[in-house]
Length: 394
Image (tube, rainbow, N blue to C red):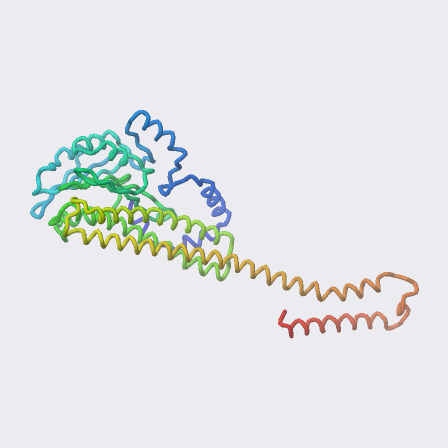
């Protein structure tokens, strides 16, 4: 997925959405009915049968949505002296785990190609369970420590121009001198890291593979901060709309953003948990001099969670303000209607009395009776208005 489609926050998109309450309502009702969806946006009920059948047959099965037509492979063979790049589908056979002088970064786009992933796993000695986790996009972000490598999975979240979350699963396998990354689709998450390798910028070619893993995870975490920033900008516009002219579409957009923030939190919490486990277990695949970067990554993850919590709290406050505004408007309306009704109660009484048409009623034959009754009614009307204003009811 391209960041160019997500970076530019357009306020007019939100304003336009506020002008289409019926469309927003329909979309929101559809999303509310999908209560079984996970943080990946995938309906577990839909895939549960596939998962059960695959486990019973001990088969490797892709579970998710196919996002690219053909799988693409990219291999970087690098050290501080050189950097070679290959895009052949069979490039994975070039990875030499027993060559300490060279590091490898193998990146795959398109995890629907189970056969290719299985071949990569067999060549590099992955456990079958690891391959199963790679091709299952419904997996919760996690970290597993094996004898020859560690497995790390995470969700990447970015906001699209259509104001929707695009959630992608990424998996990493880190060995002594290699890193394999699996992506659902072609994107530019790591383009700046590739440029650093090609141009020999920074420390990525001078450090171990775990430093490269840190760079990749840091790039993914930046996506979270971007998405939270987009939501915060929407919150500012929603706040203005709530305070000036709250509508049903305003409430529905607030609920949509709350749901998005909740997905972000559910992805970040296991991400932080996985980083904590890496630092706590002191795996030998994370070198001592690079551990500080993972500690910094954990702190950044904590900050992102706090930002998400703050955004959610702001949306909750706006929801309360919205209902308070509606209640205030209703109270004002009821106040006006009650005042008008109260003013006309005595006038209606007088009119009712003199409209009974009995023959022996006093003043019926009086020449000035009509004008006197009008004078009394106007006097009562003005007296009640003055009284209400002194009581500050008007």
